[in-house]
Image (cartoon, rainbow, N blue to C red; front, side):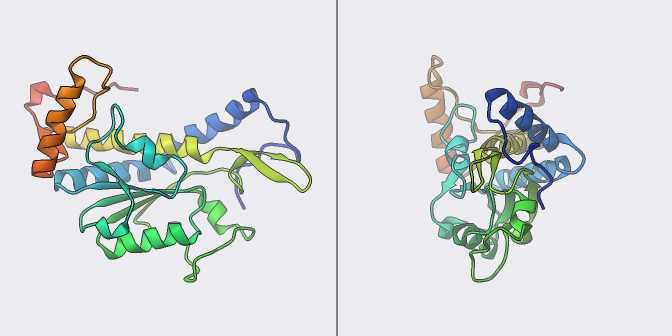
Length: 244
C-alpha cells in the first residue's frame, strides 16, 4: 500500500492543503532513501553526455518530456523519445510516469534496455505494487522492475492528493511536481559531475536575453556537428555551484 494519504476518507480540497501535502513529497527527494538514486541518475546522465551519447525523455508522463527539451536552461542534448528505435547503446533514457504498468510504459522500458540504454525510472513504486493497480502489459512486469535506476516518487494510489466523491476518486495530482523536481535534480547533478572533469553541458539560453539566439545557434551547430553535449572549459572558467 502507498505510504502517503491525506487524513480523512473525503479530503477537503484547498490550495493551502495541496501545498501542505506536496512539500513533504518534494522534500523526500532529498532524504536518505531517494537522494542516492537521484545522484546515481545524475552520474548516469553525465556518463552518457561525456561519451557523446544522448539523453532521452520518454513520452510517458504528461509533462516531463516537454519540460526537459528546447527550453531555457535545459540541456541541448536532451531529446523527446518519440520512437524507441532511435535509442543507441550508451544513451540514457529517463522515463517518468505516475505508475509504470501501462503497455506504453513497459514497451518503452523494454525497448530502451534491449538497445543498450541506461534506464532511469521516475515512478511511484507503491502505486505499481498496489493490488488495485492494473498491470496492463502482457509480460506482467512493472517499470521499477526493469529500470537500472529507480527514483521513487511516493504519493497516493491514483496520483491525486485528495479523495473526493462517492464512489471516491483521487484528484489534483502530485507526480508532475515531484517528477519535475526529481528530473531537474538529476540534471543538476549531471552538471556537477561533468564540472569535476572540466566539462560543462551545452544549455539553451533564454531567447529573451540579448544575444541568446545567436549563442544558442552556435551551441546547437556544434552539438549537431560533433555529438558533444558538453564543451570543455578551463578550470577557472567553470561557474561555481551554489551550496545549499
